[in-house]
Length: 114
Image 1: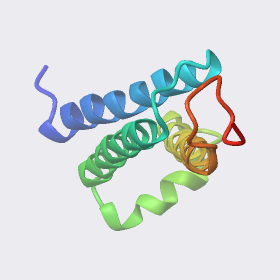
Image 2: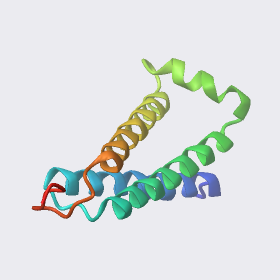
Image 3: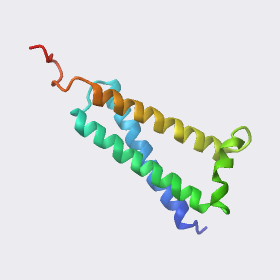
């Protein structure tokens, strides 16, 4: 088996990006996030990897200009469901990043009113 480079890149890059999202989500759930700049930077790097992997996946298609049609086949195609869920994960990560950016920059355990 000799997969195309785009498939290898897609698997590696999107896996790294979504894995970073998972780790940041786990850190957020357990209240162990680093400072907000570092957390937002990590989410941005994760998004960069995930989007690069998804673009690589689109480049692997026979007719990349018809990639938008893949989203309409979500009932019958695992690739379509993967694309839809990838966009959903990117939106969740964007929401987490917005919440972190708007959060109080004071260290944990301290209020900005002190």
